[in-house]
Image (cartoon, rainbow, N blue to C red):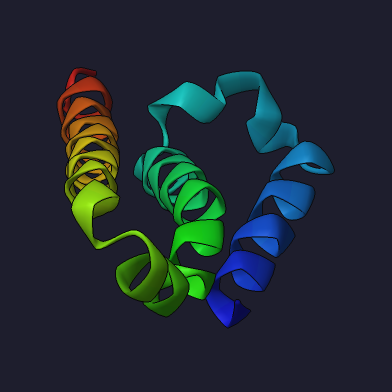
Length: 88
């Protein structure tokens, strides 16, 4: 939760600065975007983890697949940001 607050503070600072004109060339933007997407999507899953495990053990594989896809998406955004910002 604290990490989400810092990410939102970064985006707020980015919006109110002159860096907004070329924000796609900043690695911090891509890292914050990946983390924000991952944590906003997984926050409900983390909160309901024990409930799902206890009440729906047969559907727990779906939980695993969703977490795997979100991890792939987050690290894909990190990789894209590292490749994109290196080109200058």
